[in-house]
Amino acid sequence: MERNRSRVSMWCECVEPARSASYMRCPMCPISVLPDSGVGLWAHGSSWSGTFALARQCFDRPIPAHVARKCADLLRSGGLPVLLALSTRDWQVARQVCLAPAFRDVLRWRHWTRIIAECFGRGACLLSFPVALYVVCFYTHLMLLYRSGPHDHMMSPAFQASLQGGLARITLGQPLEVAYGSQVTLRSAASRPIPCWLQSRKANYPVRYDSGRGSSHQQQVTCHHLKDVNNWWIVKNPSRAELSVGRPPHVVRHGDVVQLLHGMTSRFLNSHDVAAPLSPHAQEVSGYVDFNVSMHVQNLWKVDIINRVEDSQVWKTIVSEVRLVHVNTSAILKLSGSSLPDWAEGHAEVVADKVKGHKGGTTWTVEEHRYGTGKEREPQLYSSTSFDVERRISLWSKFIELQWRMLTVKQEDVEHKYSSTPLEWLTMDSNIVYWLHPCTNAQIHLIGNPLLWGVAKLSLLTYLIMAAIYLFRRRRGIIDLTDDVWERFVSVGVMCVGGWLFNFAPFVLTDKRLFLYHYLPALVFLHLLGPVLLEHLHAHVLSKDQHRLMLLVCAWAALACAFLSYCAFRPLTYGSPELSADGLRALKWRRSWDILYRWSESPERHAPCGRTALLTNI
Image: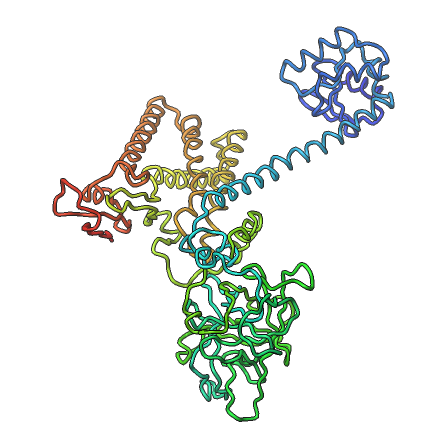
């Protein structure tokens, strides 16, 4: 070793060799000496197929045969990738090679090239591929699930209009461009998860609010969560009296000033310097009633299209997101987020507020739209509208909106039937019913395999107890495990127990509605812990063959029971085979499980769908 170190100092000027069992490393460059194999040069990540060409470049002559054999032997023995290996008697040549500027430059170039290549490779594998897989999953989701569902209202009208059966059925064929004389419904973009529409009705604000402040006593304007005829407004040209769309239609553009006339009560949308019912810092919004008092009409609103492409952008159905700016006071029509008292039947408060920027509640979208004819207005408002599905938003826009809704949407205050708490996940007190056959007892649940979930919890408990015992004994100087085995035991805990905590603990701290499927990522780590713990007990804890044999028998028995449990619960997890009501009752191992079943007077034969009684076993 000492002789090799002296030889290294002759051919590597920057050397300060580091002692090791198998090599001495130069700290200044990616070169090492292999004392047990003579003098050797190697670099991480180098392929030995290009070794000889590099050496020819530096030597300016072919590589000796015994050097090539030495390289091949080192590679076949499982050593690190070899750049150049020389026998002990060739150390003078090695010195010339190491001192050659070309050789050192090539080494440094390859070193940085390898680092850059690894960065790109790891970035592609760890970032690009997961992101691509995530996008592909949602692409498939949006392509296959193109019909309307019960929670479409959480999405924008443009998103809903692209789905079959929901808003698309209502808005199919309606005009795209809003014109003077158009009859529209205005939906607030801030009403999530339950939508609401700008509404007025034949009811006035109370003379005095509950706080003692006075009001304008004019007609109420609110935001209502139900669709009815009171949601319709007529876009009127302030300079003309007509309430019908001209030929050709005079479209409304960004920056135009309009009046909004309520369709059923013929009151103009108005605002004035009177404090709002629940938001005294903002102005009250009302349907103007002329009481012959010193409160003049102020019913002009400027259309501000937020997502416009150009300043002359046309106001469009579904697509355009607009702010309505009060001309007299520069206040913006806004959904405040507060619910009004009983005198307004709990409707949401609408105000005019002087806010800056595109803050929440100030954006409105035309959802339903028709061109008014000016004759028999009330029958028109009661008739159904019929957005051209070809004008729907792109798939990429859907993807971005869906991610934003997932991050920002607020859940309803009411409890979901199948929601659960993290403690119930550990005790298996909850399940989720996904599907129930309309005529038979076939059904699909999200429910865990009781035995596998029990083994997972037992593995966690066993590991924690063993870790506590090991630490207590090591503190007292009693070493039960060698350093290698102890490091492996700790690494298992960091990965499995740490992974379980990392995926489980955030749900304990969150106040959002939770379901059983939120626990599945954490459960995977406990399933990984079980086999590793079994191997540790067999190899390092149990010393007698009889005890090891008993452990193996218990392990095989647990696997057999897990398989039997899978077979027993397969009708609930896969919906097949169908079970009778008594068979379903037998699978109800926990009183909290919600298992649905049907019964008929004749147990041998299922009753017809229309005459079957549906029972929820609670």
